[in-house]
Length: 93
Image (cartoon, rainbow, N blue to C red):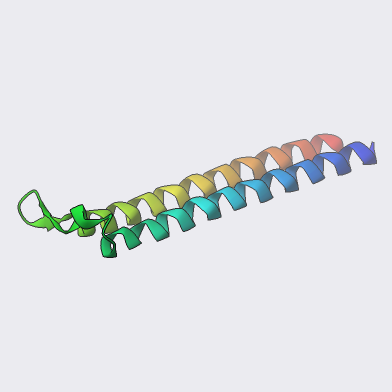
């Protein structure tokens, strides 16, 4: 019984760690995507869009919104996992 519980706890820890690494990789990739504004590849970001906003500003605002959405998604998944672990922990005892 205790080996099964330990295996479940280990699996849950591994899943959370994997999720954190994926989240960190996505966040770092998005952070570094802003460097496009200073490279030749990102030259299109300097041109005005919609008459008064350039691409770099639009990229910056969209990255902020994406970061907030990713953080909210990550926290909601973590809360859901925590609730599931609490339910399973109560049944095992």
